[in-house]
Each structure stands twice: as C-alpha cells, then as structure tokens.
Image (cartoon, rainbow, N blue to C red):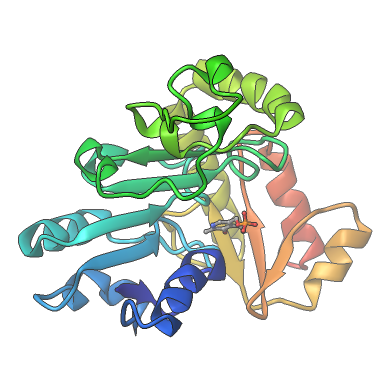
Length: 253
Ligand SMILES: Cc1ncc(COP(=O)(O)O)c(C=O)c1O
C-alpha cells in the first residue's frame, strides 16, 4: 500500500493496523512522488486529495493514470478537498470525505463514493439495520438482508448533524463548486501575494509563522497551527477584508 509520508493519520493508521496484522506492507513516499512510486508491487494507493498539513494538492491525473496502468486500487481521502476543489470521484475506486470541514457541516456526517465493481469484494463488517435494503423492515432478526447498493456499508445516521449538513449542501449547490473554487483561490492568492509568495493552487495557505496563531486568536481570527506552521483556510464565507486584516495582524499589511 503506497501512502504519502505526511498523510493524515486517519487515512494512514488503518493501513498501519493492517500491516501490524500481517495483511499488507505500507510504503511511505514523498507526497509529490506518489504517481511514480506506483509499480507492479503495488495493490493499493491511499492518499489525501489535499493534504491537511500544508494544503498541497495531490497529482490526481498522474496518480489515476499510474494506478490504471498497474491495476492498482485507489482510495482517496477528499476531506480537505470536497467543498472547494472540483473533483471527479468516478476516476478513483473509493473517495471518502467528512463533511465537517469544507462542506461546512456539523461533525458527524460523511460521504463515500465507491466504484460499483468493488462493492462485492468488500465485507460490510459494520452492517446494521441502516444498511438494510428496506431500512424500516430491517430492525429485527435474520436473515441478513443488506442493500444491493453501497448503502449496505452505511452506518446508522448522526441525526442532528444531518440537519445541518442539508442546508450547507443546498447553499454550496446554489453557489456552485466552480464559483466557490474561484473565490477561495482568489482569497488564498491575495493572501500569498501580501506575503510576497507566488500564486498557488490551494485554498489552504501554510506559512512559517507558528507564533502568530495565538496573536490571530486574540484578534478573533481562527487559523490552525499544524506541523509547526500557521495554516490558513480561505472559504466561501471569507472576504478580501478578511485577508487584509490577517495580513495586517501578521505585520505584512
Ligand atoms: C485529510 C483528512 N481526513 C479526515 C479528517 C477527519 O478525520 P476524523 O474524522 O478522524 O477526525 C481530516 C481532519 O482534519 C482530514 O484533514
């Protein structure tokens, strides 16, 4: 299993657990070398479409092509991508995302795309009433009667969280992902320009100013410190004024 060496642990650890059980060997490679690391010895590649630590975009085209050439299963964590980065999930085998980041939802909801051909090969080990073909006829007793579709892998829902996810998705759908993408990149690049950095392709801008986190927080600006760097994430609710204010607080305005 090929995984980027800086991969977020919620994507990496499941494979390290399987490695410990003797079921696979995990090969960690630099995030920008995933495509070239895929070879005849690779069964699976698992990676984030956008890295949590620094906002780096995966080479989706290169990885999809290399995986196809070697018959490798592709598993994409799109948690830091879906909501701002247009992403065609059908190019990969499995694409999962938590909704509580760029999809602006409460914690507790998530989505997964799965290529249909893979469904039969996956044991639904978390099967429950909610994975039943007819949910309300699946409360009690045998036989095992799971949905034909990928819903058989679903878990019983965190109800209250979905109440928030629905309007968030409706709003994003109304604005349109292309417009969100353009807006977020414009803000991120305005921020980069203010810091004297070249334009980039990510809505996440990670800079070497970790001591600024507390200063920003005191001014009511929420940014994260990750991997020893200050990480800013620019989204649909932010404005040019927000960017300028952060630049000013960082002494670059
Ligand atoms: C790439 C990625 N995947 C998944 C998650 C969510 O992980 P979890 O649901 O384990 O908190 C995050 C959160 O930071 C993330 O950055």
